[in-house]
Length: 355
Image (cartoon, rainbow, N blue to C red):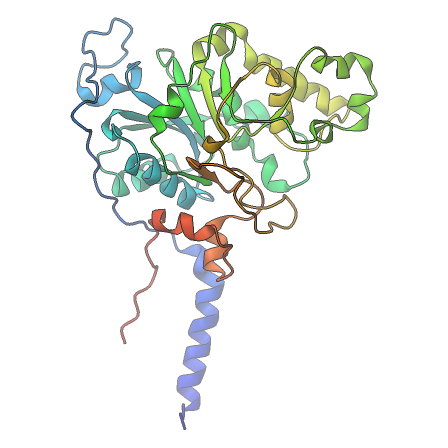
């Protein structure tokens, strides 16, 4: 029979309670990822690009090169663990990982130096920049939604990428932080946009599109006619290919803001930053194969129940919804598909206990 003296038991209990109470106070630390190299047939950068804003070295030329794959993501402490996994997955499955330029957007209230140092320590060879997003520019326009996490101003940064990123960047792939790729991102980035569309994303035309807007919207003819003569389908804004030149020319940020201002006056939708995108772009986007956004793996926005993959091949797994794989893994209550995210997790164990 195992006997534990009371003082020892008390100390163990005190340590357990202290650790539980203060676990969130310890900053997350991440392992260094391996370096990934280009295959021999990857393109090299034009050092004489007349539109380049760089100072001429390879590390800065990439940020204005059309031969690079430009990836934009938001960055904050709450989702940094997911961001690190997403970055690793992009690099690991790319045939030209050294030709990827990462553009990270952080809130003006965030500790940008800490976020930059965290990325650099795990990916010392990564080509990236961190841009500041002024929260106040959008906070006044945000209406409460069905889940408080959706009301974070940084969720709306994707609407301002054309203003935030360098003017020389023509095309960018926007990715959420709760996903991993299992295919080469260059394939997604090369999606033809044509002459009329500025955005490409997987569409889901079997979804109940009317549910994304309130009866107030549908009962008002001047509003519901927004979708007249269009095949308006739902698309998830966590994975998008965006033509920034075309976006600026069409002034689409202002068009999104116009709908947000109307929402403040008369409630026409319930779901955060998604409906304004649908109002502006639904029926006018280039559809992408569903394999590039197997979304909804986080479950619905209330319960976060486990979900299965949609039928067909998979290039990107997206834990959109309430449940995040790292939280369920930490709670020892993972969904089956969370094990597909786990190999990309770079988090270090905060304590190593000697036996």
